[in-house]
Image (cartoon, rainbow, N blue to C red; front, side, top):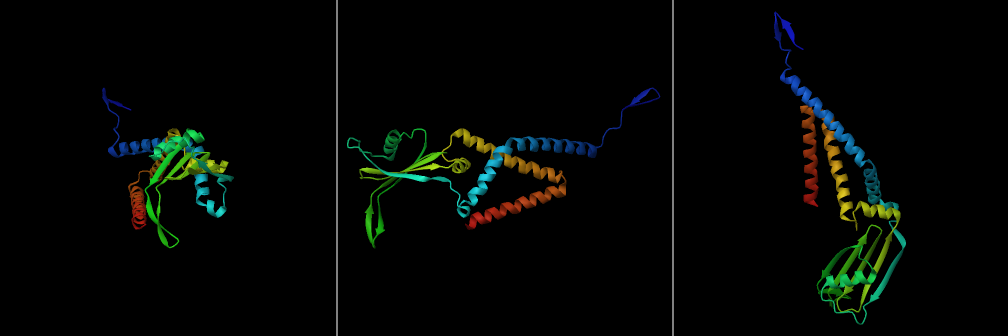
Length: 229
């Protein structure tokens, strides 16, 4: 407000620099709370799924959680007599996709050169080995071929509903859309952590120093474990 003194208008009392800094800090904390709230709302449902499946994955061996159906199909797929010679793994991968109708599944292939291996106390020459892994969230198909054979070993595994969730958690055989969606959950967790720490500190210098020291100690611990692993 302004005051009128002898016909003159005196300006109202201007806030001090400390008061202005306090107002900016209050506004910043309010802004942090809104970000924390809305990011938390976005990640609540999928964050629950990722958290629950993460716990189950950590204890799947102890709890003996069935992540795959009991029936596992294994077969020897014979190469037809008219099949062309496969000179590269990519050529066989395309043939397998067409033969087994796996075009909708993601593909990873690996080629191992011919090498000597120890068998029955003597060294033998193992032919080159090609392996193929076709994946989707609900099933996986693994194929193995030793160059020169007339058949391919194929194994198919179908996921249980719980196994489907775990494969989604690990982004196994998913599309780019799901990968990007999962990235938003990971980024949301980072934002929630940062905003939560800042809200706890209330931008107090002493608390901010405590946060910085704690994060530095955590980073040093992670680096030490990684370096000595």
